[in-house]
Image (tube, rainbow, N blue to C red; front, top):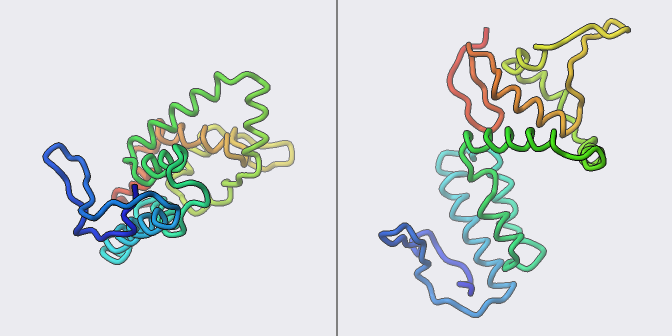
Length: 192
């Protein structure tokens, strides 16, 4: 079903926490579904974008997706799973947990699967961004050595698989003097 758009005042919760839309349901169509996605986008945008003028981490990605509407069937399991499980809706501790599990699963891949994953993620560059986050230096340079040419080397490569390994190490072995979590939680601290 679709509603063809609605407002935040039409979103109701029952005693069990179930959500109901107080609008006349209509037969599903891609056009009406896009209006519904646009309505959800507008509600979140008004509440978070304008209200406090700061989106939670990765939330802009979700808002952009909702406001433009998916190019595929809005009823597909993939679209529904993407929206309801979007990383911006997870707590930072859940994101950390997912990072640890994914890192552990990487070590269990067969050699062929591992090489295929590395090939997919090899063009995901993150090393240069690290310079902008001094609180991560402790973990990044914990195991370092001088290369033959005199440059400082670390066990991390500039690809997505290595970023996952670094993230897991950062969460487990962060510098206790100041915590800066990669996925959206930044407690107040002094950088010395």
